[in-house]
Image (cartoon, rainbow, N blue to C red; front, side):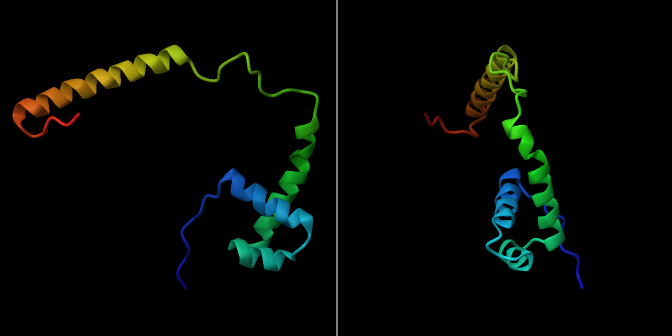
Length: 103
C-alpha cells in the first residue's frame, strides 16, 4: 500500500467541513467520504471551531484597522526596484536581440 502525500488544507476548506459536521445533516463517515478526509480529522476541526467560536463574539478586537499590517513605503520601494530591474533587463535583452520590442 502506497502512502498518500501529505495534504495541507486551507482554512476555508477546514471551516466548510467543520460547519458541515456541526450541522449534523450527515454522519462523520458520510462527510469523510464526501470531502476525502479522515473522520478523526473532521472531529478535530469541529472541536477547534467550537472552541474558537467564542473569540468571534468576544469583546477584544484582535485587529486594529488604524495600524497597517505591512509597511507600505517599503513595498513601494521594492516595486520601484523591481520595475527598474525589469526595464534594465528588457533593454539588455533588446540589445542582444533576444527580446522583440512588444509593448
